[in-house]
Image (cartoon, rainbow, N blue to C red; front, side):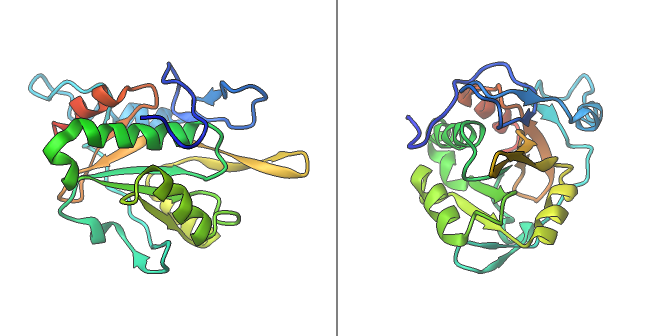
Length: 213
């Protein structure tokens, strides 16, 4: 299914999005080496083979944010459901719409298990991503996708909790955002399990998700 927004094709890409490049193939930056090192946890001979990064040895982050209707939300509110968690912003030209389009494709491939899944999109640009804009953006992909936002301090705390990198990058009279391009998988018990790489296809993500469903 094609995204209602512009998107880049799936391809080899490290886990941080650089969204200020001049052409449509935005440059991706590699700045998640601590995650890569920690992903070795739980990689014994009996561990399932993952295409993403095994984060089961890492503590699970948390957030104190609001959904687009203003209700306060934390990770505990989604306990009982496996979660795909992504940090991004609505003016992202290709990394974010690609990730959300892939999440929609993942749901389609999951079949009956799709109803269990929750997709959470946390904006790293609350200055521009008002509840109305964020709600319209996530709903354009799937009405069930949850947009979350907070103050600058709440956003920073949520990102640090998941070891997510983001920063504002000036572009003439405006700005864009660099940010981590991983999708985090949290199981139904609220435990952080996998970081899906941006380069993984929907089918490859589903292969990983089956290990936690």
